[in-house]
Length: 205
View 1 (tube, rainbow, N blue to C red):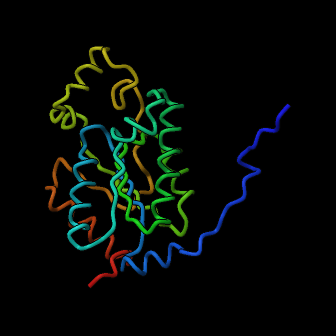
View 2: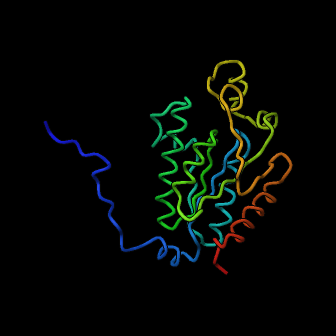
View 3: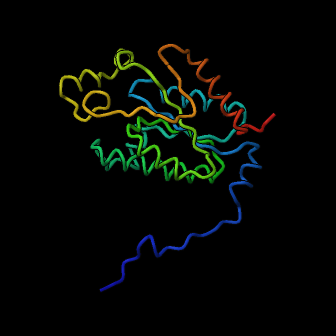
C-alpha cells in the first residue's frame, strides 16, 4: 500500500524575502481588518471604501468579501454551523498569507461565532488582527436588504440565516465598534483610519 503524505510530515520553507522587508518596501505595515456584523450592516461597503482610501495613499490592500469567497474557494461549503466555522477558518489562513505578503487585508464576513473569530485572531501574529464590529439593528439591516434575503428567511424560504434562524454572537473584545445606523460612511472611515494611525500601521507621510 502506498504511503499517504500528511500535513504533519510537510516541512515549512522559509523565504529570504520576509514580511518585514515587504512592509519596508510598501512603507506601511500589514494588518488584518476584520469586519463582522449582520447581513446588511455595511461590512462590505465599509471595507471597500476604506480600501479605496488606502489605495489612494499608495497602500497595498485586498478585500476578502464573504460572497466572493463562497463563489470560489469555499463554494463547497453550506451554511450549517460547522461549515460556517470552516469558512472562517479558511479565510483566516488566507488572511495570514496576505499579511506575510505585506498586504493590508480587509475581511468582510458575518463570521457569526466568537469562537471562530478568536481562532482567526490566534492565527495572526503580533496582535495584527483588528476586529471591527459593524453594529446595526436588524430592523435597519432588513430595510436595506435589496435582495430580499431577510424576507425569504422569515418566510422559511432560506434556512440557517444569521439573525433570523441562526445565531449571531456579537464581539466582546473588539478593537472598534461602528454603528452604521447612526454614523455616516465618511465618519466610519475616519474612525478606521484613526485606528490604523494610532496603531502605527500607516507609516507613509
